Image (tube, rainbow, N blue to C red; front, side, top):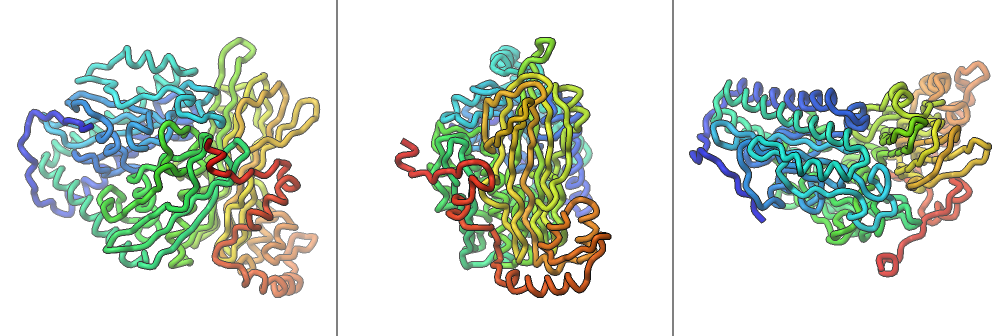
Length: 622
């Protein structure tokens, strides 16, 4: 299948010289336009997942579809490869099926809009954005069914289609899709908001074409891509070794009792390129934890990490993509075969970030981050309120960000740096629930010279009977520490019934019935610690004990002993640190806590849950 781009003016663009000032003006205008896209979306969307939390990702691309500015990597090439129709001025494209765009979006809840930008009949660029819809139909409210074994169970799948054809909206198409959604008003409004954001990108690109001239604008975008490639080539040459380094981590379970699922990557440099080989990753799961990993998306993840660690002034774009080679085994957890379920892929996505950080820091451990981009915990709550009106909440929770070379990990922060929490006042105003506690969990961040960020404890009191679903991870394996740092605390979910009975809930579950005055205690994981905790300033530890971020007992993980008045007992601290020093010195670069088999033996006692069963692939997949 090959997309055919219709252009009235077939005269090729002229390559012109672009002076440095003009190049900087265009570069910064693209950066600003990308943020204007966000502002447009967040001010006009209806669902709290987009409006309040910002679960959407913008992109501005050149006329070839290469990203110039954005957040999540380029997804236009996957669309072009999967679309076999004509692309004309005034068209706006829409899709949500990962299998029809080579995983450019990775589950059906993400609705992607792409808009070709024309000037005088010629394609000069693209605006695109996708956002997570609260509901797209399927087996369960929220469309993230843990027990799905096929993508057909996960809601409506939109192949690459024209939402607007030559400027005219295809209302019948829109009605058919919205008819499958439990929240059609929200979905329709969010889709319109995404289109409006893309039109903002179109407006700004055309303004630049008018101000500087089309040829100058196109030449500037070429130069921005080339400059990025040159910078990345230097970073790769100086930061990535020719020797192979490997790392493996785990998704704790699949929600069906099997796990953990290994994700493994090996990295090395060859002929000026970086090779990222995911051989050794476990086969795809029967459940919905599979992550259809788009190669270009992974390249962007790699590039963002390199740039932010080594040279944050570089504008990340698609210019360097041919410097990275990605190898993902077919039929693995990261490249499942159709029609594998994909809706709950976020756990593997989070683990990709942890794995990349571990790989890129092995050669230079001083640049390592600990683990903490470990999941993106979801809570869904739905039902009918006292007036018979349907309500449906989709909320992303926060965990602890890892300890880093230059400081502590933030407490209770998001996997995505641009995300924000849904204010408790918003939740209580729009949904039948009350937030009784919202606080960090002391000692949940791993001890270290730089402490891992603490997780969050949220106590939800449900005011109406309904159904909840939970999607989280890091309940079985630990978020690992580095360079002597300790692992972070694991996540837990506990339901306290109105009659006082309690039950531990698994980290992945659907269809849990809750009644009025039931309370859910929702505890997220903490980030791993960075560096020797005995080197942390003892007075800082004492201050954090006073602030409730570390307990008095937890201070001893830093070798700090406190008096009754909360001051540091200097003599006792010196003695304890001397006693602990040999143990800390023996720790390897990575500290993942006990080995898997020991975790299995201790699981029920520590978590109240049965340990996951290691899959036997032939039997399990059969």
